[in-house]
Amino acid sequence: MLVRDGMDMTSVVVAAQGGDRRALDELIAAYLPLLYNVVGRALAGHADVDDVVQDTMVRMIRSLPRLREPAKFRSWLFTIAIRQVRNRLAERRAATERGAAAEFDGVADPGSDFADLTILRLSLSGQRRQIVEATRWLDADDRQLLSLWWLEAAGEIDRGELVEALDLPAAHVAVRVQRMRAQLETARSVVGALRAQPGCPELMLLTMGWDGQPSPLWRKRIARHTRNCLDCHRAWAGLIPPERLLANLALVPVPVMLPAALAADTLLGGAGTTALTAATTTGGAAQGASWFGQSALAKAVVAAVAGVTVAAGGAGIGYLNRGEPAAPAAAASLPAAAPPPASAGPSPAASGSPASSRTAAAAAYGSTVDAVEPAPPKTRPPAPLPKRPEGTLAVVASQDPAKTGGNDHPMVHRGDFVTLRGQGYFTVTYQMVFTARAGGLVMPSWTGLSGRLFHVASGGGRRMDDVQPGQPTDHTFMGNPGQGVIVLPAGAQQMWVKEHFYLDGEVTLRQNERGADYNLFPTVSTWQRITDDITTPPEKGPIRYGFTRDTGTDSAPVPQYLTRETPADPAKVPQVSEVRQR
Image (cartoon, rainbow, N blue to C red; front, side, top):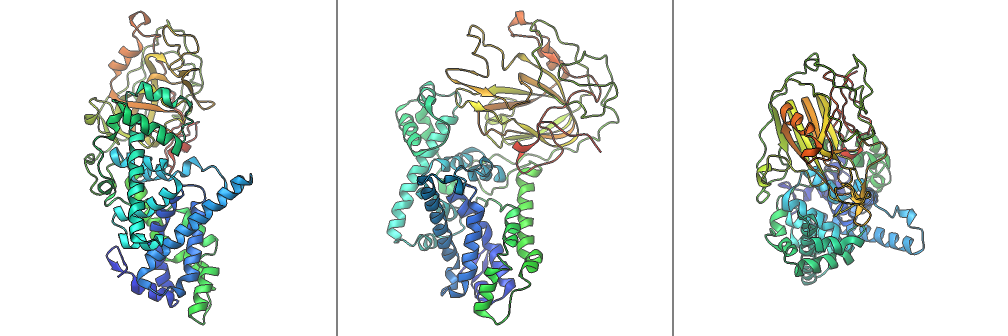
């Protein structure tokens, strides 16, 4: 019996073979998410994923009338998909050998990395996140097998279907699964060792020549080190079996544009449906394209995508996945935010014009945005920090501070987030981990703003581009020539160790790490703590005084990379924030 979500789909397959468009609609709606996940994981999210999914659907529709065993539709569909994946990889290898790799966009789009999509869309953390990151380290053949075995472990298919999809003897498949599983466990230890804090000095030395891209060679080198190093060997300890981690794990939602692309390519209204109809009926398929636009497939897929997006990233509350071992408890709902006041609060004496502030006495909120600025004199005390009304800030975060031994909310991986709601001050502490991975930095971003967010001060005793005490002038807190330097995007404001903010409303801070390695530590603060931080003189330890940015009015600056929208990819929020109400 062919079962999907508790329904016997065999009769649906038979009806689709007989030319029933509604049945074909239902069939594709049921299996497009599975197909997208298989192809996406097998190709590691390469830009070819959508093309291969579409090609597989075309072949499925054209060949469906000739399927002899409707109960085996699912494994038959996966056989087509894996064959298409292998063909695409072979074409890419051939193009590379003849120096024409550009034909296949030989470098994957970083935004389409399927591991990243899985982590972001499903809000994964802990060992579930680790196992997804580990898939980047597998060989191409192992990734193809993983794409199917993943569904088996998640309870979507059974071992018999996996064997039929690979078209190999069951004993051979069992050996391959065992070998792939061993490679996956090795890759998990590599990810764990590279992510460990504090990092292992010997591992840092070993990876000095590594370009940051996962590869079989570096997997072997790093894994060998983890087996022999007393510190890194801990990465092998306490690993939850992957079957337990993947059990009941949700599918990555289908991109909204994929069904639209299927319609645009006349997949359902053109050759595919025509071939199916011609083989089974005497009628035509002239209405196919318009039928798709009104079909349950388009509506179901878009609704499913929207639902998962809201659950995983829209509100930023809780976890989508079911039954994760040792998963964090779902966070309590945030209290409703108070409506923003007519003004930003009292207007204390002006604090002096910050270098980055292009202010006017009655400027509208959002008219002043952070920008590149020179460092202020180290021994110049800051202007007084205007005091705004302090209420209560509620926090929902992807990381539980109770498990990290502190009051802050560590954001150490791409996809980590903190949502704040209410009225009050908070601080974000920066840590540049150039010893782990230097290079270009993808800035964090602020999304879903309602109300007002101000960048009120900078402190922590130093800017991150200050020279480290006792070191040469090219050794800053952003890096050095020997270990690598983290480079900000052009036009980005240089961060200090501590950046201080004031919120009256709601906003989500998102970690967008893709190139250089950095960590963020947001924590709720007060006007007094911030004042104490920025006014501590250099003779008491800091390299420099802090810097006041707040003017006490709506003319105070807003941070860069801030938006009222909730984009699918937070890393693409524009640098120049546009948050003025129209």
